[in-house]
Image (cartoon, rainbow, N blue to C red):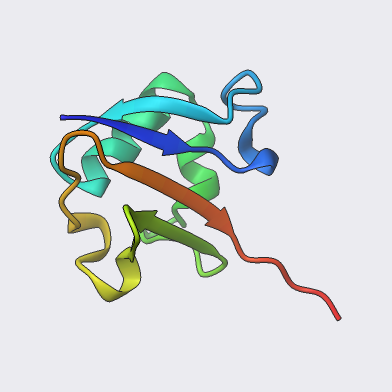
Length: 91
């Protein structure tokens, strides 16, 4: 399954400046594993040491926040866009 993955500015150093990259996999877990294989180190910025999505990183498959779906087991149908969005704090 071919998908597109939107990369936030802070992680573009891993993708040679690309704002969007191609990915593949039946689930979000598969896509993130392939992403880390293609761009070493990016996975550790998205997933914590236990393999879960980091607390301050939001991931969407299409319009759906994966935290309210199946997390890393969320299906990634062909052509869907995955968005990785770091939370912004301030005040």
